Length: 317
Image (tube, rainbow, N blue to C red; front, side, top):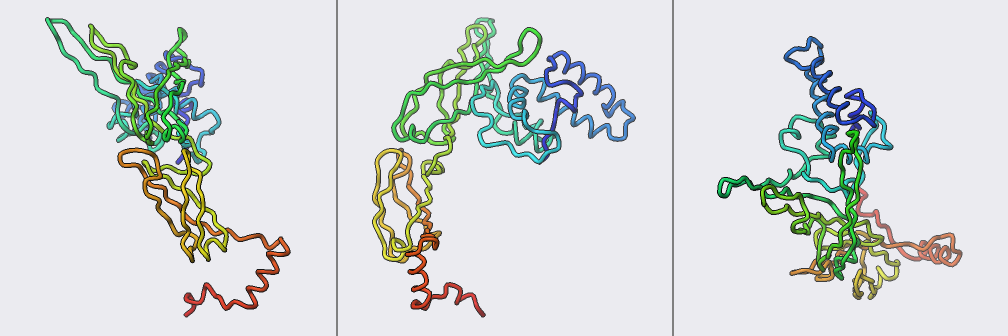
């Protein structure tokens, strides 16, 4: 996927104010709008211009885009890094379905997904009231928090326009209780931490979408935990009992005799806590001692002479 430089598309500097971006858009729209333009590529150019303006005219989308695109050049092959948008507080989550349908894959990759929460409007005694809008943010937690529960101080970046119409990031710090058993994709709702209401309507909520930081040994999927379990050739051939340290506690696992690399073992109930808890899934990987060790080399040479073993025999025709 090609990285799109929205600033170049509109012909403005990265430091451009909101007014400068609006003026550039209007100027280009007069030139390329298909209803009035005589340019051969007017329709395609107008689509690109609309996409760039949709991002750069939105303070939240622009702040996230700026963070992502600092070290990327236009036209480079691009994939957003995992959790690139973690820590940004959005008043809307993602893009509208109509924007996703008409804009590029690059736009959808960055801003696609669930739209922002709808406000509830109603009147009471002739007065207009509206509930505040929910805010959204992706937060990164340690896997250990899911096993123990915790209270964590979480800092969110909140974009706004300064007096010159330029994007700045404020920091909002919250103490958040992380429930035991939380899993990736789960929403932690902080009541009343979204936008204020109108006319006495209640404030919206802050919805924190949980993701985990990469772990040295475990890969969570839902409440299941995956781990590559490295074993010696003699543990795989003869069987063994191996103790595995978990994010909380430990478990002993029996390696069956004759285990091969790629075999998966399931230990029920030893994943992330919950009702029911997840499982621990172990992918066996048989590791060979290096032949640089003289003793290991001598044993390999003896095995080559004395053991009639050909793992490719069944592949021959």
